Length: 310
Image 1 (cartoon, rainbow, N blue to C red):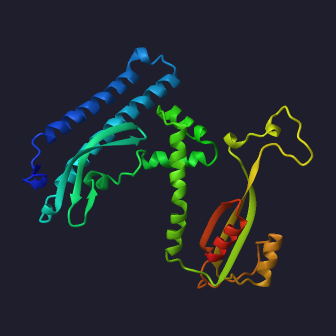
Image 2: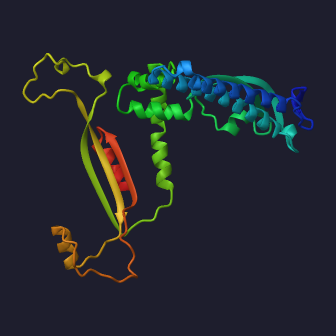
Image 3: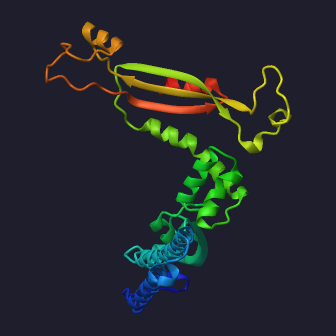
């Protein structure tokens, strides 16, 4: 078992006498929840319910079961990660006590306590359970961050969480969606810098293309009188407001040498009965290599500089 003496961690043979009993209890609770759901479906009196009502009932029950499973999983990892600390270097660790953590999963918000460990020689602290589970620094799960960030690219922050809240029954606020999106945006440059360092096979020729696209401004940012449907637009004015986004596309390639007949066939889309190279030793046509696609909002110079560096 894991214990403490003079604020130092010590270890005895790990024997959790109640682990099997607790595990069986949790399994029984989960089975009971699922059995209740099956009973609701198969009972004659409930079969007359509207299908949309039954559908929502099933979803809410499964979300509740999912939240229960996440809580069970967290407790099991806490036990396992703390038990794994024992070893020959155990005296390096100092137990700093139990600390609470909030985690907002796709199934709902849960709270739990886990140990905080201090490594004296390195003057570092860490949470074994957090490390074992790959916990995000923020409260929200990576799945929720991904969904909210993806939705916020096409709409405003309030709208980006409305559908998630409606489906999953959460109460994620507009302000929290903005914080998540801003945090994700800080990692964009790091992502592209790390991607550029990865070894890539290059072709003998380099190609680059740049194109401007109009990106609609988020509804929350549009606050002009001409955007009102009751106001007549003046000459040269367009309904709505857009910003210019420059898309950079770069890649390398090896030339595909073709015969005159092949060129003619491609121009006139004549692909039948043409004597084309039939040497079986020829390799298949190579595709673009090391392709980079990235858009820059209102910064043409940066888009072109990025593309030419790839």
